[in-house]
Amino acid sequence: MAEFSGRFRPKRAVDFLKRGIAPRHVAMAALLAIIAVGSVYYYRAELVAAKAFALVRPRYEDVKIGQAIARIYVPASYVEGSIGTRANLYLHGNAHGHATFIGVDALRLVRDGDEILAIIDGQDYVSEPFGSAASGWGNAIYRQRYMDLYNFLRARYQIAEEVDLIGASMGGLAMGRFIVSPPFPVERAFGLGPVPFLQAIFDNGGDKRKAPIRNAFGMRQTGEDDILLSKIARDDFWTDDLPSMAGKLPPLKIVAGTGDKVFSDEFGGSEAYRRLCAVYQTNGGSCSYQEVHGLMHDHYAMLPAILDEALKPRPD
Image (cartoon, rainbow, N blue to C red; front, side):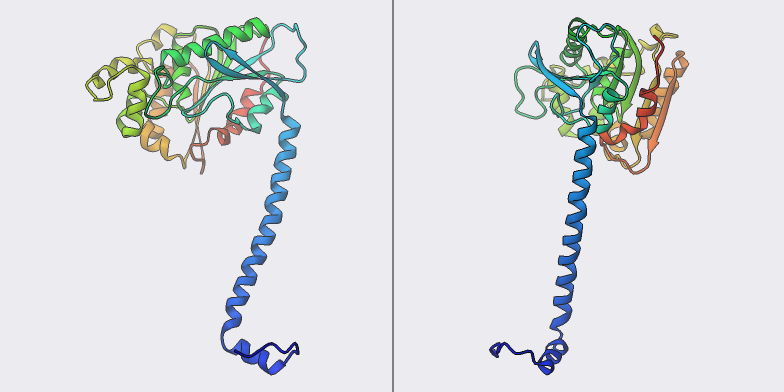
């Protein structure tokens, strides 16, 4: 190998280029340039997102209610002792909880709507080996924790009696039960890719769904009790309980993404939501269904689709 003499020799440079080494170097240089430019824009975007978050981030408190932790976002306008502040209960999806970042758009409900937004850990165990306390999938434990959260908000913040529900994925099951058999007054309900039918996700979701659902409802993992699910599934949206709420159902809006494979493969797809709305409307309720192009099973990315409606002034 020739030693580098420190002098620039044009002929050698031309020979170097002719040997075909230059294209690889040019490609490498171009790649490094793209990475450098991309990094600059990425960090700028991160900075913009951070600033945007800082603008809307309200204060919050974490409290233990029973055996679960709740996070309560409070608007800056809230004054201790205020009576009648509006509240939203965010019913979280599988493997989420109080500490999951719910997105800037959700926090706009707090800032722009001057409303409280609260979420509690409705689920303890998401995979095997499960703990002793079965929870999640719209079962009694999950629902009781949100009832306890509601009672806490009424006592601590003296919120308005009627609340809005936001049911994300698995949280849609509890939202449905709260609609058809309300333990507290529900003013409006919003579903973000909600599980519309427990039986559908049990049948279509494979073993990864069957095991936690069996655990949540005290069914044996051997499958011997699976026949019981047909009775358990009455805790879904379009059950025999809907007629009992005829004329008293709160407005319901459902949003799903066209790129959501979970919704299309496991929940029953658009047809399941259309069935839900049809039965809902038959019983005197207002139900709308919207698909957002390209969105996957990302509850937070779905929030802008409900935000305008959620921020509409409500009658006192």
